[in-house]
Amino acid sequence: MVAFTKIAIAAVSTLSAVNSFSLFNEYVDRALAVFHTPEELNSQYNLQQQKFFQIHNDVNVNDDSKPVPGKSPIEVCDYTSKQLLTLDEIIISPNPPQAGANLTFTAKGTVDKTITDGAYVEVDVRYGFIKLIHQTYDLCKEITKVNLECPIEKGKQVITKEVEIPEEVPPGKYIVTARAFTKDDEYITCLTATVEFPYE
Image (tube, rainbow, N blue to C red; front, side):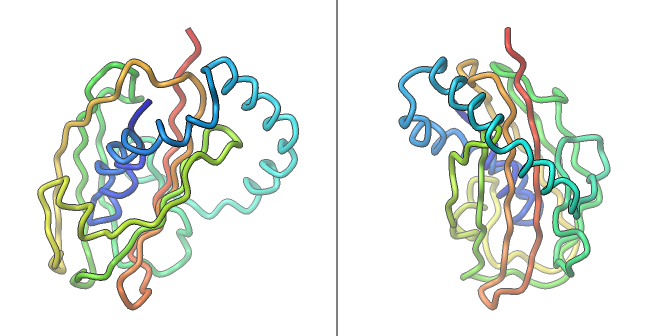
């Protein structure tokens, strides 16, 4: 299994939306160790859907997100909160992402303030209603994976990256949310993406 947390972290780290896909590669296998087989994962997924259907609906009622231009599955969450990163466009190909196909990703945006060491990003990955990952990452370490380094200077930024998505990704809906903050806890950005891999 593989690849979403990269999209969140890369768009977060000035368009770090690419890196989150890679982090997904590294950590989803560990999260899925809870389950012995994809069939068991699907069974757990169905049970969680039934149990939390009402909660899910309640969360959507208070949705505070806005799509990023470019027709990607990525949205800015906590949209009404002041954030240091403004994304102008995110383009991915293929769109939607496909298991077994390389994903090409280009993000353009503007950072209102220089981002220095100590910045961090909190990432959540859910498979339907099952939380697979909740982890905090050092933003300046993670952005080296998309050929950036801290300090990230104030102003316009452009990132292009290709990420491999393995064929072994279990089918279902994945929801990734990443919230990034400076070392002084200023809100850099909140990004969320929902990607669904179909059942064969």
